[in-house]
Image 1 (spheres, rainbow, N blue to C red):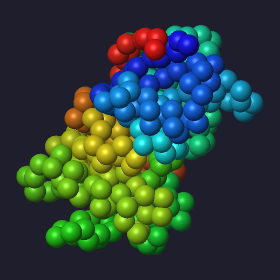
Image 2 (cartoon, rainbow, N blue to C red):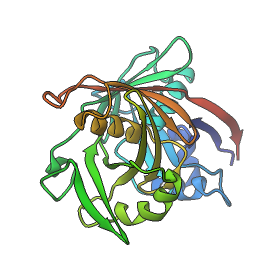
Image 3 (cartoon, one colour):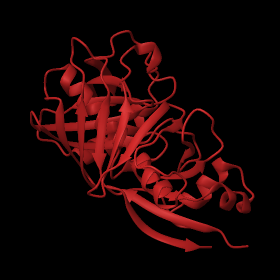
Image 4 (cartoon, one colour):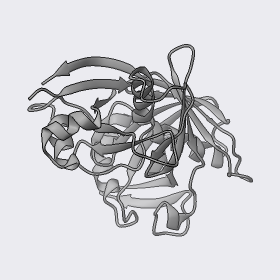
Length: 280
């Protein structure tokens, strides 16, 4: 048996991608296949598994997306950029701008002339019950974790995020490693949450480290970048177009919303690159 596998990455956020017919050769449930293939010691190694789904009726194509621990993710911005380039290059779609069915709804990526991919990530979700976030006040909520109290903002981009702006000169990665796991599983988040720690460099630039739900520390998180910009705009910290520096690289986020009228789409632009293609 030989299985054709592709590995791709967007700003260091890496993914194993294989067509559905190739996946069937493995003979495992998708969640088990994700855990096996994403294992960095005994498998290919990745933050997630992506399998295109060509059997959809209300979009040009769909996907199955699993985190490295086998859990299902509603949406992934970096994964979507890689997925978009993959299905376009493999001629599973025949146009540069198309629709993808996800658990977060219909997402529309576009292959740009410079090789980057821009994704219309849809509208942010700020209603607590839809995030889901148990407290009613999703902005500037104080959460107690270990020996610290953090003030954060709960935002969903199809998956939940808790965005924390750090004003002191602290190590964002160290904060994410120490407090991310505790916040991820806090009772306020019935479906757990991604956690972002952010330094504001200017109205148009931020630095971001993320503890990703189901993965742990990752080099980049597209939905996290989007949620962070939305939270920054809602707090009047940021303008609507922001360069986001992640551990693995830089993406651009544009939000067409305001604190008074938050019903605007979020656009994520950045690279998507092949790492290798192989058979195993």
